[in-house]
Image 1 (tube, helix red, strand yellow):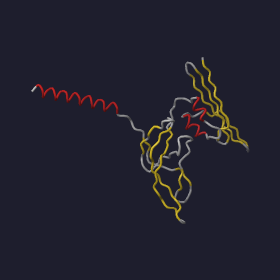
Image 2 (cartoon, helix red, strand yellow):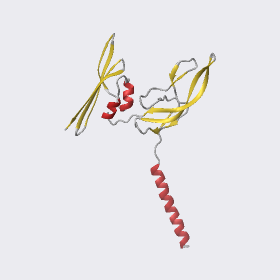
Image 3 (cartoon, rainbow, N blue to C red):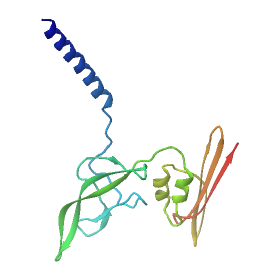
Image 4 (cartoon, rainbow, N blue to C red):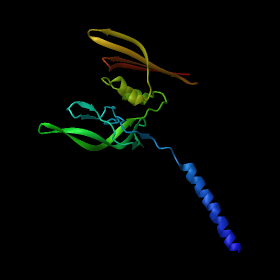
Amino acid sequence: MKKIFKVVTTGVFALGIFTGIAAKTEAATVTKPIGSTFLKSALYGDSFTVQDSTGKTVAAKTTNAVTLNSFSSNKNFSYATVSFIDYDKVGTKWVKYTKTATGYFFTPIKDGITYNEFTQAKKGMTYNQVVSITGETMTLESTYRDPYSDVKEYSWSKETDTTDTTIYMTFDFNKLDSKSFYMDEY
């Protein structure tokens, strides 16, 4: 009788530990719903495009909800295998196909703009491409427009106990034209 009691007690205790561990290790899964647009790479964040039934180029959209995986070299992006609709011209008709690809999704990390992210922002990138790298929106400081230019100047700053960081970026016709990085340490 003592042996049965010991086995039952040990089994219940082990089951309690096991269920406790399982509950603690369960993590929230990040998903994107049906109809989400996705990117063709995690480098610049260009939308994955397809043709619609009239042959017009449009941004591809997911046809199923997808579970995202972390992108190891750029934490601002996640990826998943996505299904989407694309039309291809066959003869004179546009034929509907369901296709799959690896799609990247922008998942910004609001941890400030690092010097590494600053250096990844290259001349000619759009404002959205820069934000997809940095994970931070910037403050529009000024605009200037004439027949030859459409200039927008942005800034971003962060103060900590030991540093003050300020970044300025100028976009002309929504393309990065110049940038500067300042850091004061004290």
